[in-house]
Image (cartoon, rainbow, N blue to C red; front, side):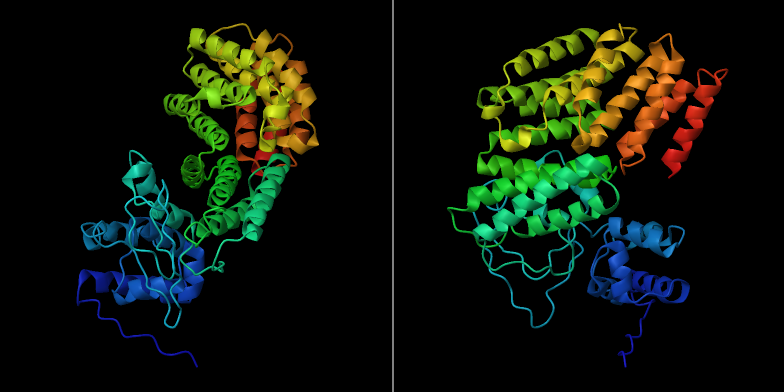
Length: 467
């Protein structure tokens, strides 16, 4: 028989009242065990139990997740400030290791991730860290280095090795390859998102594990690349805070490993994400950071980063700087030599370059009354060049081309044909970015309300986005 739960005393303190309120909602309104609720809010059942007993602090982020899962109408979040608001900084949400579980010794390394001011190794389960609090800090140095690991690892213990061996590094590389392929072919949602989430948790959990010095740079580089592909997948699935954490973890690992190529790729993705969510100024800053010591980068990598700069300037509707950055990207790409690039840069080929620069020129054509011809030609090259392995990139370029023709061309029926081709590809994806571009196409199609074909396209877009 399960042991009876401890009788709570809600009038003993604000913490006890909060715990009693949580138990009431958990048991009487939404019957769940501690473990079941923990799974739903991504912490361990033991932490839920300790919060109920008043012996552990609940973070605001966790209170919000509890309100959502238990459908309290915001009761716990509203109470959080009165109960924990003044003490959260001094006493973060924690839990100790389960009784009888041996502490894993951690080998502290000097460097950007694990050596900076960290003197006490973590024991037991890593404590969850508020992602939004982390992302609100001015820079990576503002948070304890080991917390980078906590940001992506779960509260429940995970199986990790006692020492890093070549096998773990091979597994990290294999995971990155699989997620990269699946994400490009199917998008970042659904099963791909779950695979990516589990992979970055496991990868981050390896960082504090004792590691031979000879393997340390390769371990860091492997986690960096995994962080890049997972962050890209999370970005595509609109899990933007998670993507930012994965990208920052990747940047830290790349810098500590002295991997300038991985660092450049990370900042390129960080730039693209911020541009996408409507902050081109921050995106431009990331792209410029990626170009630091550009002499250490390949021509392809420089082209990638200049294309990101162009997209930022395009969103700002800065015609002169957009055209200048596109020119710099083209000049760098003309010098591209695949033999000089890391294997994972193979994606940035003729089609990808033309698609990326076309996005920048699209914004000038649609919002700054510039000639749409250049953007259209580049999108056509991208669509023809992307094979099925890059179905998402092809679908996004098809959709943007259809939007461009619908908005600025003189043949909306041709735009409808292009839109249906894009829908054929998008319907196979789980990509929030592709869906958002479809919504934009529907808005442009709405300008042609007297054209029945445009109305049919809008209906099909609506059905696809809902699905």
